[in-house]
Image 1 (cartoon, rainbow, N blue to C red):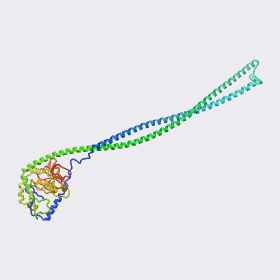
Image 2: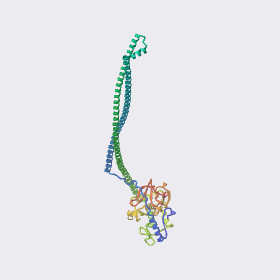
Image 3: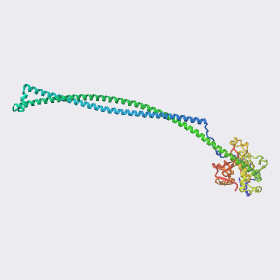
Image 4: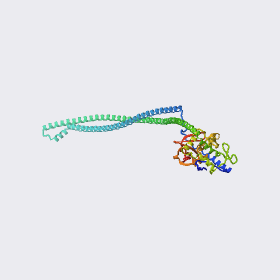
Length: 509
C-alpha cells in the first residue's frame, strides 16, 4: 500500500516484520500478478505474402497465351460455321422458294390443262353440232333436188307456192330455184368450212392440252425435285448446326480454361505485386527502425551522460533500493529478515511512516516539475538496448529474470539480466525518490489517473484489464519507452492505442 509522505516523494517505512505465512502469501500474489502478459505488439510490416517465382509467372503467361490461341481458333471455327449455316439457310430459303415456284407453275399448268380440256370439249361439241347441221342440210337438199327433177312436185309446189301468172313467172321462179340451190350449196360449203376450221381448232386444242399435260407433269417433277432439295438442305443444315454446337461447346470449355489461366496469372502477378509492395514497406520500415534505433541510441548516450552527473538521482534510487526486499522472494532467507542484494538484512515494510524515513527522504522533496520528469526519462532512456528479462529490474538497474514456466522460460529470461515493463518503471522513477511496486496493476493506482487522451511527457501508459498487461513511459510526440516482451529489449516505440486503459498515471505534477 502506497502513501505519500508529508515531504512529497513516495517511500516505504520500516516496522515489525510480518508473519512468515503473510510474507509467503504476499510473495505468491506478486509473482502470480507478474504472469500478466504484455499486449501483442502489432508489427508495422505484416508477414510476407507469397512470392511466386519468375518460372511460375512465365508458365502462367504461357498457359494464357495457349488458351488465347485455342479460343481464337475456336472463335474462327465458330465464325466459319456461322457463315456456313447462313449459306445453308440461304440455300434452304432458295429451295423453299423453288418449291413455291414449282407449286405455282404446277397450279398454272393444271389451269392450262383444265382450260385446254374444256376448249377441246367445246370444239368437239361444236364440231359435232356442225356435222349434224351439215348432215341435216344435205339431207334436205338431196330431198329437194330429187323431188324437183324427178317428180316435179317441188316445182309445182313452188309454182303453186309462188303463184306464177304466166311463162315469165315460171322462168322467174326457175331462176329463184336456181338461186336457192346455189345458196343452199353455199351454205353447205360454209358449213363444211366451219366444220373444217372447227376440226383444226379441235386439233390445236388437243395439242394445247397435251402441252399443258406435259407442263403439269414437268411441274410435278420440279416439285418433287425441289422437295428433295429442301430435304437435303435441311439435313445439311441440321448437321452443320450440330457441328456448330460442338464447336461452341469446345469454345466455352477453352474460354473457361483461358479464364482460369488468366485468373491464375493475375493471381500470381498480384502476389508478386503484393510481395514487391510488402518488400518495399519492409525496406522503408527497416530504414525507419534503423533511424529510430540510431536516434534512440543517441538519446540513450546523452541520457547516460546526464545521469553520470546526477549523483543525487543515484543516491535517491540507492536509498529506495536499500529499503526494499526482492519482489520475487517467497520466503525469508535469514529467519524473519529478508536479504538484500548487498547482503544486508531489513525488516518488511509496513503501512506506517517513520520519522527517520521522512527526514531522510526530505532531501529530495524539492525535485518536482520538469526537472523531475526529465530525470525519470533520462533514467529510462539510459537503458535502451538492455535485454528484456521477465521479472527483472529494480531501483538500481537491471536484475536477473525469473521463471514463468512458459514463454519467458523458452527465451531463457531466468538466465538474463534485464528489465521487464514494470521493472523499467521502478528504475526510472527511483531517481526522483518514488518507489513503485513490481506489478503494473499496482502501478496503475500509484499516482494521479489522467484520461489517456490528456497524457503528457513522463506519464505512465497501461494496457489490459485493470492495467494487468503492460506499462510504458510516455515521451511525447506519440512515442513511448518500453520493455516490450521476451526476446526483445528496452526501446522507443510508437504509442499503441489498441487495448490501452482509459487512464494514464501521472507521478509528477
